[in-house]
Image 1: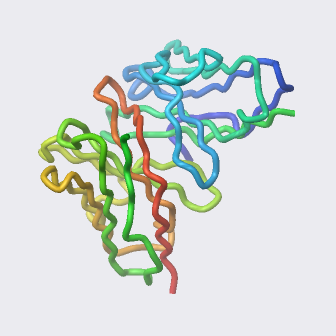
Image 2 (image 1 turned 120 degrees about the horizontal axis):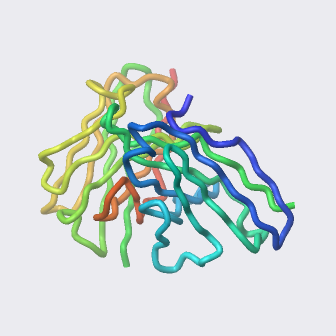
Length: 110
Length: 120
């Protein structure tokens, strides 16, 4: 059971928008910046968002991040079939003194 | 070009040991926290351990404390993870990753992973 809670799956049609939630606590999301990753099986995970809402160079602005209290959200607009992947939120837990990930959310673009 | 290449994975019996290595190129690891993350078959990502730029601070997930040891060689530009007393639940693809020098734990470059299988 993961420290951060994500929905197991989300789906939407091409061109639409989807959001993925990540719920934690005051010892992680509530006090530390959140990152988001895209992961295709057999490949290296890709950093999409860091410091809650910043995009690394090369990540399109279709991807956005936000945070409120102990929850964070990843938004993806203009969905493409190539966006089908597993998405993970991650941060640091100050009580555990360890990094933590959400359980992952499988995105299906119908 | 930044690259991380893991090696050392394989099949090992329960209770056995293994040493994973991660060779970095295109950047100097001495300027970055480095991290190991694993993914068991059919499951999600799990943070395993990290180590400060100069090796003076190390952190581990509870399930590997006392069994795994993270280390780095800033001269050789490499990262290692010593795995001991291995269990079936340690079976996973192990990734090394570079942490961005910003707040939180964002990892901007990852290797392709090395598979560790613990089975008799």
